[in-house]
Length: 271
Ligand SMILES: C[S@@+](CC[C@H](N)C(=O)[O-])C[C@H]1O[C@@H](n2cnc3c(N)ncnc32)[C@H](O)[C@@H]1O
Ligand SMILES: [Zn+2]
Image 1 (cartoon, rainbow, N blue to C red):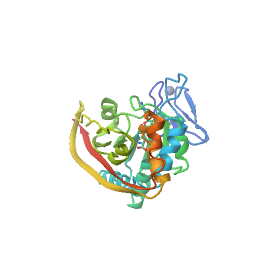
Image 2: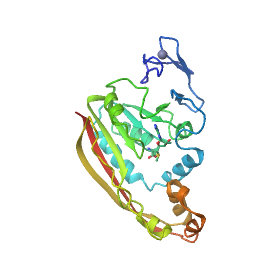
Image 3: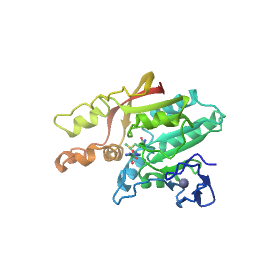
């Protein structure tokens, strides 16, 4: 049996060489890049992040500026995992954190299974460059092809949070690690681009059916040493797409800067 269930009939899926299939005859191909598409509404158009956004995020993350955050997430996961645990990254993107968690837990001697779910097949298509040891499915965080009460640690980083669905898939003693930007995250970048920069809205952390177990912040300064570093950050933010050409030009001559990274990490369990 695999870690996934059939999105059509909810029966367990078995992994074969090139497909996943259930006992009721539903069959799903494994793409060359290693993921399986279990998204039920296959309407046309782009689902989730597109190729350009994925490449921009990968380029920035590969420069290491969010490694401090990634370590904090892996350490949190480690506190709640043992060998045999199942970790699910819901809205995993191109799997930077997903792959880091697997490597960290393996380094701690824990043999775990790590699932990545994202609605963007372009994102999951990138993940193979990081590792081929993740179980990857294209699906929505609002309807995940994963059995009830099967996950020990669910990770959700800058991605849609689906409280009811997350509570369904975690075990009774499972946890959810939620990561989000704090109000002043990337403030110096915004101050350079905008005449009147605004703070990120504080997210509402209360979620029906979930209890907050702990909250912490991870705050540090990133030291950008080139225009490439600065532009790689800008290009992976939503600001890049919302900013006019004249404001974008302000960054052209910036060859380095210090910018704060400020993240919140909230841990939930189910009530
Ligand atoms: C800001 S990115 C974060 C990706 C990754 N967690 C990271 O931090 O690098 C948000 C991700 O959520 C995905 N996404 C958006 N809506 C989604 C949905 N309904 N279900 C699953 N993934 C979704 C996007 O495709 C994108 O990869
Ligand atoms: Zn089926």
